[in-house]
Length: 231
Image (cartoon, rainbow, N blue to C red; front, top):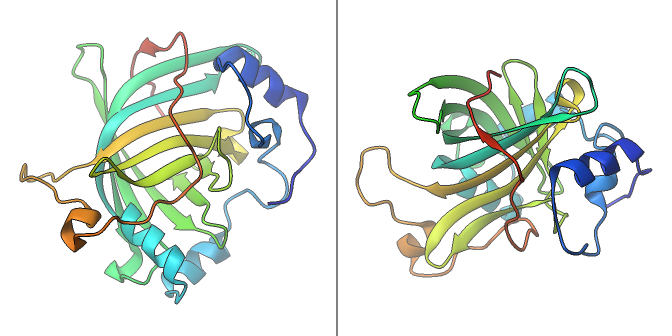
């Protein structure tokens, strides 16, 4: 994956918002995801909705499709443009393939966020998504806020697939465009809204489903407060 010029602002964000004991061999977090074609591409969404014959990308899209729930953390730039606000809450995310076609690499979705502070607050957000030729996942909310999940990054990327017999989806959603400077971290598991026990893809096929993304573990935002941010 092509490396872009490092932006000192991102280094400051990383130092202020995350704590890691060491760095791995990728520097994507320090790159500016607002350059080099990382923004939303409507043409990619349209092409993805027309269907694909790329088996690996199709498997990724089919794995992503469905119902997920778990914890979310959001780190956003404060109004002063320098300090950061970190929030933690719970969420359910549902991904649909465009036209309900199993060969679509794009689609729509619904996210329901729940406060984790005992207030019983919630909010419902709609979004569109697509997977590009590199396996990166793009998510754009109706507000216009767009996030990219980098399939090639180990430390600040994502993982989607089987983990100890359960489908998981975790990693970083890095804001671009309107959401530049914001970062979301998700840690989700597949579930069945009906309450029935949900089979993983691997359980359904009696084989281990492939995993996508290069993230190798979870690291959490420090100093997050339990509050539901309005987005």
